[in-house]
Length: 198
Image (cartoon, rainbow, N blue to C red; front, side, top):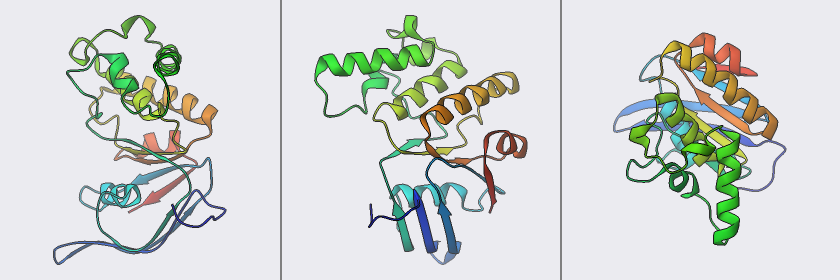
């Protein structure tokens, strides 16, 4: 995190290069706290690279200021197949004793409507249920900023529509600043306050 600004995320002169290829060049962007921003573009246009630079996963040139903790929701869900649902959700919880952690996991299980499934493994869940567990895992550490990289790309259209409504309800109520990468223009229009085209 850099020095305080009125923005949750501020990007200036951002460039990303892989070898001799410029993926992104001279990007400027300011995002206010609580905004839900969609990022759309063709495959290979640099959408995921942009998220990864903000998260600090890859090298870049320029300046990125992030005010708050980041939660990352990857395309492949990011949950661990050998862990039960409640263990996956609790994985990112730090600085709490066992009782506090158990209470936090219980709260999140209730919020994602999976209280009865805490002892199941991911292989015993549907795609929509796995996605809910992945979001609960991301929210467990109470990040101020959510970076979501096409989290619904593997879901069928019916499940995807239900998950869009559910995601919007949860993140809006928590006032999370969100960057949401998608190929789906309709999804971006439904979910987002603003849309950035790369």
